[in-house]
Image 1 (cartoon, one colour):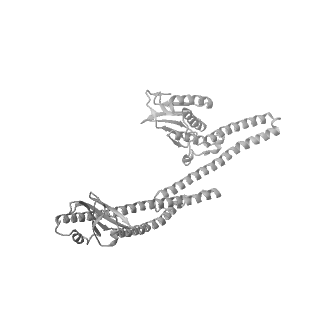
Image 2 (tube, rainbow, N blue to C red; image 1 turned 90 degrees about the vertical axis):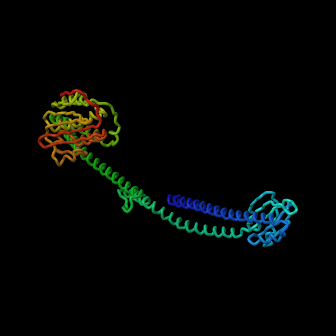
Image 3 (cartoon, rainbow, N blue to C red; image 1 turned 45 degrees about the horizontal axis):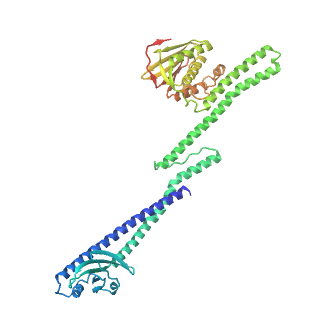
Length: 457
C-alpha cells in the first residue's frame, strides 16, 4: 500500500470513528434525557393519583376517580399482592396486554412489547379493605421512539454530509502532500537515467515543510554537483600534473636507452632528472591522497602542544635541509594550544616550505597570544603574491608562478592541505602579501593556555 492510500485510509477510518463516537454520544444523551423526563412526569402523576385516592376514600368510587386521571396517561390500574388487576382504566386495549406485576415498593421502569416502549410507575397504597395494593401508572413512549428515529435519520444524514467531503478532501490532501515527493522521485529517476543534476521547481507561495523539503533537496543537489565538479576538476588537474613528470621520465628513459650507456654525462643528467621527477611525483601523490580523503583531518588527537618548542624543533631540521636561516620569536617561553601535534607540525612544514621556496632571505616565525587566542605567523621577504592571485592560493593545484613552481617542485596542493588542517582545528588562516616585499601567513587558534615569561629566539 502506497503512502497516499495509507493517508487516505487512516484519515477516513479515524474520521468515521470520531463521527460514530460523537453520534452515539448525542443519541444516548438525548434518549436518556427524554426517558428521564417521561419517568419524572409519570412519577409526579402517580403520586397525585395516590394522594387523591387516599383523600377521597369512601367518597368517590375508585374506578370513576381513575377515569378522571386517564386523559394524559395510557393506563391506570390497581394490582393486588397476587399480581392481579383489581381495577383497570385504559385508553387503548393494547395497554391491557401488559402483564400486571405487584410491587411492594415505589418503582419506575421501562418495558417494551410489540416494538413499543412503555414507561411504568408503581407505588404501594392502602386499599379500602385495608390491604396493601400497588398503583400502576403506564404511559406509551411511542412519541419518544419516533423522535429518536428522526434523530437517527438526522445524524446519519449529517454524518454523510461530513464524511463524503472529508473523503474527497483526504484524497486531495494526499495528492497535495505527496505531489512534491512524486516530483522528487521523478527527478531522482531522471538523474539516475540521464546522469545529470536536476533541481526541483519549488513553489514560493508557501514556506511549509514541503517547501523546506524541496529546498533542502535542491541544496543537496547543489552540493553534489559542486563535489562532482570538484572531483572532475581534481582528476583533470591531477592528470595534467602527472603528465609532465611522466613525460620527462619517459623522455630521459628514451635518451638513456639510445645514448646513456655510451655517454656518461647523458647518463648522469638522465638519472638526476628521473630521480627529481620521481621525488616530485611521490610528494604530489601523497598530497593528492591527503586531499582525496575528506575525513582525514576530522580525526584529530587533541592534546596540549607547546607551540614554541614545536616551532623550534621544526625550524632546526628545515634549516639544515634548505641551508637557510629561520628564527622563532615568541611572546612567552611556553605557549600551549589544544591541538593535534602531528597536524600542527605538518601545517608548519607546509608554510615554511612555501616561504623557503620563494624567498632567499631569512624566514621569521612569530608566536603571539591575544584575548585567549594563539597566533603563529610565518613571515618571508620573498617575491610576494599579486593581489589578483590571493583569493585563489588555497585552491587545489593553483600556482601563482607556474614556471617557478615547476622549478621548485610545487604542485599547488600544500596550501589546500594547510587550509583543511586549520579548519579541522576551528582556526583561521590569513595571508598578507605584496609583490617584491614578501608574504605573511597567520594562523589563529581559539583555545590556548596562558603562557608566562617572555623570550625571543
